[in-house]
Length: 136
Image (cartoon, rainbow, N blue to C red; front, side, top):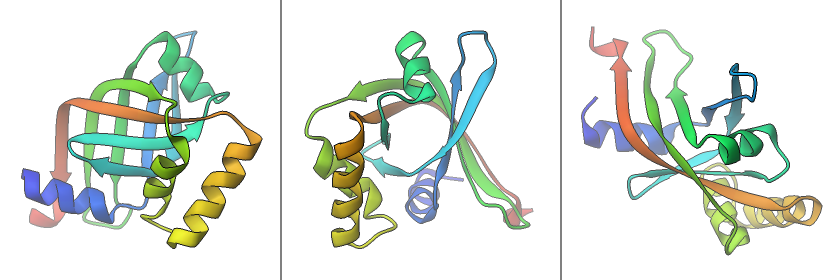
């Protein structure tokens, strides 16, 4: 896919799968809400999660954003992750608003932030490999 197609695809995709490296070298993969914003992939999660522990130890990540219907389409993103703990509620809302109403996104963001220390994962892509089998 070309850049414009990727941006459109990212805007339409329901969720991403984030791959991080466990302490024993195995791969941890988790589905996660995301938003593509100005060249970065933003993800909202909770600090005590395995993916955050893994990123704190090794910030190299892989992200898969794809479709599941025949004529698969997607992108495999290799990059580095940074953890952002500042101004969490509005950033989480922006990610959740991709799938929820503004009101529901705010309620969800505040409820999660009331239970756990929350964090935004900022992924800077170093390489993107895309595929679109509908073009074959």
